[in-house]
Image (cartoon, rainbow, N blue to C red; front, side):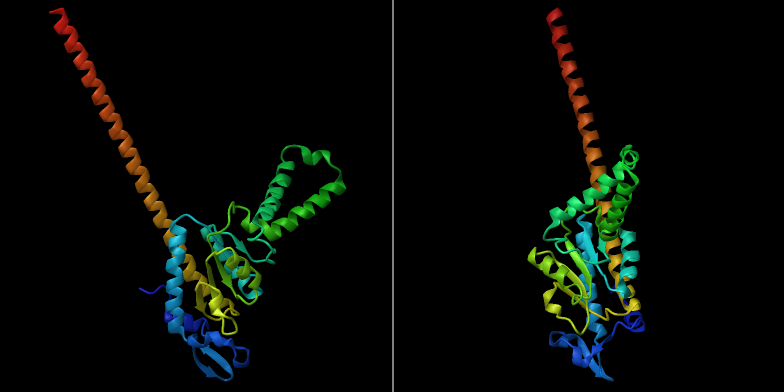
Length: 270
C-alpha cells in the first residue's frame, strides 16, 4: 500500500512546479505537462519516489541511526521543526552553519560550550561573575541555542540528510556528498535531482505541499522506530530467558555434583 494518497498530494498543490523558463532539464522525467507557463509535476512519479524514500528512511530509523532534517526557507522551517520534534531527530531550520558536517568536531565543541554555560548557572559560578560578563555569556548562549539547539543531542554524524529545496541548501548537499552521507530531498522543477540519492519531485515552496510530504516521511520513521523497539524487547526477552535457563542448568549441575560427592562418601564409609 502506498504511503501517500494521490488526491491528498493533488489537494496540497504538490504538483505545481516553477515557471517553465526557470526549469532544470534534469527534471524532465518528472514533469507531466506545461500549463499557463508553469510546469506540472507528475504525481504518479511523486508517489513512487516518496514511497521509495520512506522505505529507506524507515530502515535507517530501525537501525537506530539519526536522520538530520534541513529546511531554512520560511515556508518550510516551522512545518519541518514541528514534525521532526515528534520523532526526536536533529534538524536545522535557521542558517546552515558552514562545516556542520565536514567540520563536525568544531560544531561538537560549540555544543559542549552550551552545556558548560548551562552548568555555570547551577554550580555557583554564575553568581561569581559580574553583570556585564553574564550578559555577554547569555547572548552567546542564545546565539548557540538558535543555531545548534536542535542538534545538541547529535553525538556523531547523521546517517542521512532530508532536505527541503536543494537549491537553497546547496551547501548542506555538498557537505553530505563529500562525506558520502545519503541524501533525501523534496526537489522542485528548478533543481537538479541527480545531486541527491533520493529525489522526491514536489513543490518545495508551499507549506501545504511540504506538510503532506513530511507527514508520510515522519510516519515511515515512526514505523522504523517502533519496529526497532519491538525487536529490542524480543532480544531482551530472549537474553533474559537464556540467562534463566543457564541458571537452572547450573543449579542442576551443582545438585548432581553434590549428589555424586555424597555417594562417594557413603561408599567409603561402607
